[in-house]
Amino acid sequence: MYSLWASSPTNVYVSGFSMISGLQGAMYHYDGKQWTSVLLPSGDYNYLWQMRGFGPDDIWVAGAQLYPDPKLDSAVVLHYDGRHWKSMLPWHMGSRGLKSVWGTSSQNMFFGSSDGRVIHYDGIKWSVDTLYPGLFISAIGGDERQMFAVGNTWKGTLDDSVLCFVRNGTQWSLLDMQYRSQHSSDPRFGLYAVYTPAPGVYYSCAAFAIFQWETDRWVQVYSTRATIIRMGGTGPDNILAVGWQEGPVIFHWDGSTWEQIALPDGLVPSDVALYGVWTNGREAFAIGNNYGVSYVLHGK
Image 1 (tube, helix red, strand yellow):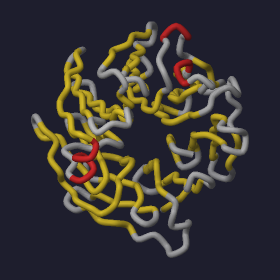
Image 2 (image 1 turned 90 degrees about the vertical axis):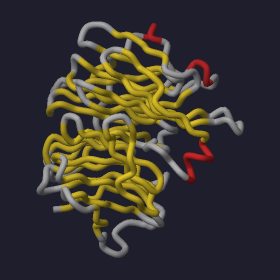
Image 3 (image 1 turned 45 degrees about the vertical axis):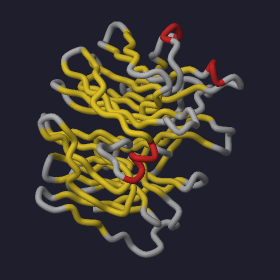
């Protein structure tokens, strides 16, 4: 499981894939007492990477359907209306797999693909913007005023790059580009997530750093030995950041200081990385795996 979304501690979803069934997309739901497998509209999905919701009856999932010929791989978008999960994306959109999803409502949804395109849904029609051919868009986020998309190329050459795009109004533009080797040692922006705890407040996270957007550039606001993969919270003064550093790690921002939360010894194996987090300020859930077994952490 790689993604987590919740509307309350008794309505939690996690999604990803099952290796037992041969890389088949999978999702589970927690009702406060037990976890149950979610019945999806098809068994053909191979990955369900990221979720975003606006209430218990309005949840979106982005993923991929794979084929022996990678050129035929296709995007998957699922939506839950409170009763049923439904496949949403028209076949003729023609995009490859989706790894990221973000939106302000079900009438303004954005999905980032593994072939450099952002798919937009306005509640009626679908449209596509191509940001950079071959770009694996790992995260999208922002607000009504401004959006960011980050990703990297996988050509297997020395000029593989990490890119950050910004969207003002309806136009995307390239904000920054680094070679992957340069980004690994001295990142200028986060690659793994874009998080907005309040309008006009933007964070991105990467290996060894958390960045905040200030007027016209990303500024590193926290340095760590950990790789920060995902962020979530209740507002600008209550943020959780999760990832991996020789074991699962959770950091907390209280409005003035970032502090690592000590996890009980032996809670989960040291090879588990955390990929998703949610909190309502009183309880928190985090999802992680070691590419074999998934673990859900529940804190109060």
